[in-house]
Image: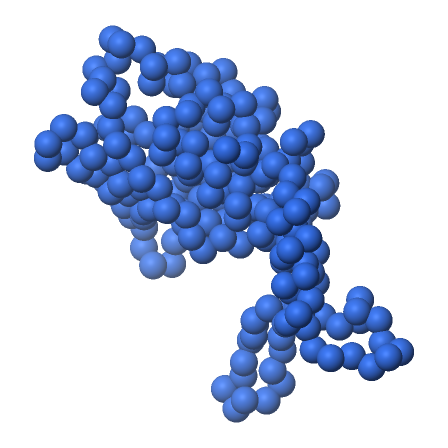
Amino acid sequence: MRTPGSARSRGSAQWTAYLGSLRPRRSCCQSWAAVPVTRFTAERSLDRKGIRTMTATVDDLLLHFEIQQALFDEARLLDEMRFQEWLAWVSEDVRYWMPLRVVRKATETGIEYGRQGDDVGYFDDDHASLSMRVKKYGHTMSWSDNPAARVVRAVTNVQVERLDDGTVAVRSVLVVHRARFAQQNDTWNVARHDVLEPGTSGWRLRRREVLAPESVLRSSNLDVLF
């Protein structure tokens, strides 16, 4: 299996050819660079006037495809309990943060979640603490992991934004279902705000913020990686 974010020269070439087949016709004097690929309608006025559209180049679509595949590959590594491979994909400078959510008034939704460094969170990990968690998963005396849970992750709603320093900001939604023993089942639906950085073999996770909509999590534990 490929590493999350690894190069896909053959797949990228096929994807480029496919996208090229969807482009509008051009005149003999018009370059392809001047023909944008429409992504979606960003805003529509009530009187159907002044419609503005957002456009993306083939490079933008290829970047979105690469990031999306990297997240899919990551989910598979975790589902298959290949935690050492996952840890190798994570940057040494990673920050992994899951804040608590506090119920606020409708006018205070911007301060529902705690701030890293100032408030308490469910997780506040760096690479060293993530390494300790990975070691725990394989330890025979870790009773929350023995017998191991069966976990399935689904990644969706992926949005990608290029940042000035060469990294990318990625927003996604993750659904995690965990089954253990005969009747112990947990499901989490969370939003993730990630920053991925380019590495020698592809994209790597530098920062992750996990946002759960619940103010009280009813699962017996949070012994899971989001």
